[in-house]
Image 1 (cartoon, one colour):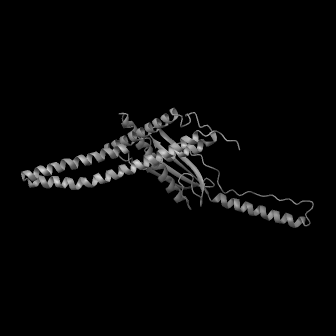
Image 2 (spheres, helix red, strand yellow):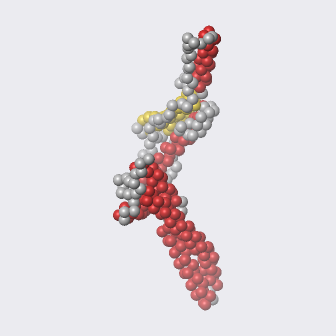
Image 3 (cartoon, helix red, strand yellow):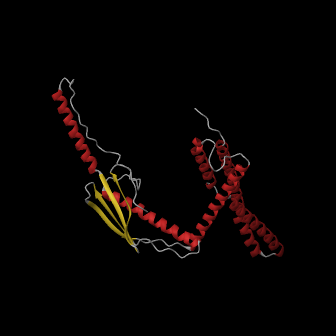
Length: 303
């Protein structure tokens, strides 16, 4: 993470200078009023400045020290980094520290998972410890804390779960591109170069995102079919085993097979329901994509 670019403080007092005009019937009174207003603005500006703070996080690692992140904000206003509204420097330091450290952990975990998918060794940990410093509006240090980082272990199960997630994402992306290519070839969607009316690009993009979101809300259809088939085959095999055990009079085998039937029969109903729900969601997503296709072909209309 580099240095965070933040917006200007939302509260900034401005000094207002008033001058008397030649037509003012009471110039002396006007000037006194203007002077009072200016002093009030200065006071409010000083208060606003005292409510501001700055923070900086420095990390130490194998390559030395470096600034991980930095920023500033104002008490009573959500911080651009954390989104939290703080009232003192301790709250600022706690919120920033939690956010920055969490980002470091997530980025390292993702780097490890990506390396393992490529059959590469785990990358070195980027940082060993971090120090946060929070200062007031005058640059005076109000809080400083240092912590040694403890990275969570990335297990084999984590890697396999991530591998499945990546494979599912790639499959969805491949299907999305195939559907789009077919629509373009059939002339029902504008080419990838852009819609007929460039002003509709944002609308079309939002519809594409909406369709992808609907598909991601439900389990993968192929996974549902696989699990449904597994449950059906398991129940069928257990039913046949129970029938053989009944004929042979083997009570233990019969009870064992009967237990399988009881456990796996509800799974048939569950995965069948999942598949129905997934099919319905995919149909809804396809309808949204089709709407985006139609809009992409709309010619520009002059207002």
